[in-house]
Length: 81
Image 1 (cartoon, rainbow, N blue to C red):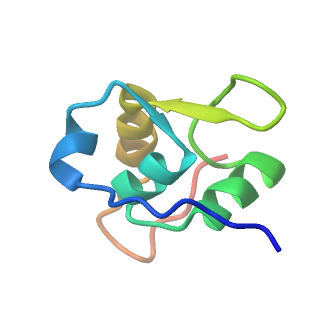
Image 2 (cartoon, rainbow, N blue to C red):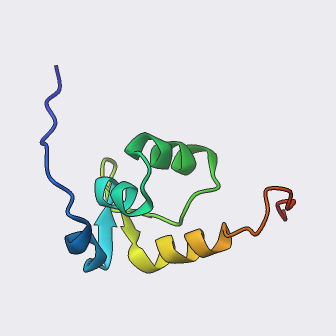
């Protein structure tokens, strides 16, 4: 059985980081780590850095750009390709 290290992801601390790991990025985006993993696998998510085979990092600026690109004024807006 795999043990995971629990850590408290303080929003104030995360806002001060320039480079975030997957858990920190998920907390910053208010989503789950598995959602970010699906974005990495299938596309459509924020740009990421593959540091090693098991470590993925995100630049906070890339997360902000990705969020800004998902801004909508209506649920009827058609997504541009």
